[in-house]
Length: 176
Image 1 (tube, one colour):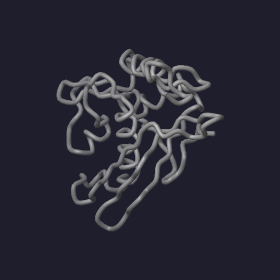
Image 2 (image 1 turned 45 degrees about the vertical axis):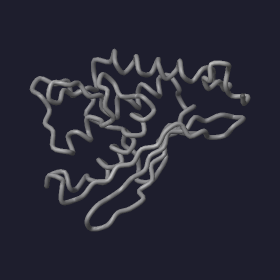
Image 3 (image 1 turned 90 degrees about the horizontal axis):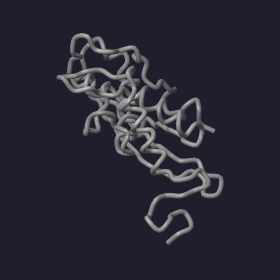
Image 4 (image 1 turned 180 degrees about the vertical axis):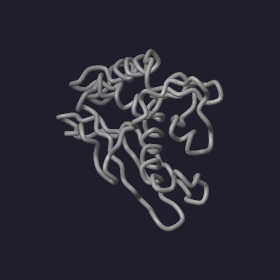
């Protein structure tokens, strides 16, 4: 057993039990009243809500990185990673997610923002693979579902319309 796990195999660093902190983040997402949209009767947590709840528990101990790994006249692809910042171990990769968007498959009014939507989708997928999925048991975020053509149900709470916006290919503003 390495120095960073206890007998139950849970990641233990100078920050405490990572598993229990992630459960706290999940609970915060599920209890949130803002930052969710209803799509086909299912509440989806926005990426912005998930990042907000992650920051409330971990603060700057988490770094989210995004990299545009391909862009051309037909499509764009992003890779996003979530890292735990540990003073002894450095950055420990917790999850990664990819998103690929084809310009041909996107509604015309979304085409000017396809790079931002793709980046947000890749961040959402990384957070989903980390287990931060909100009330659903699926990986796609609200933004990804909408980009795929789903529509928001009437009377949906959309007070968290701003997703986690970052400069393309950069780290998030709260990272060390």
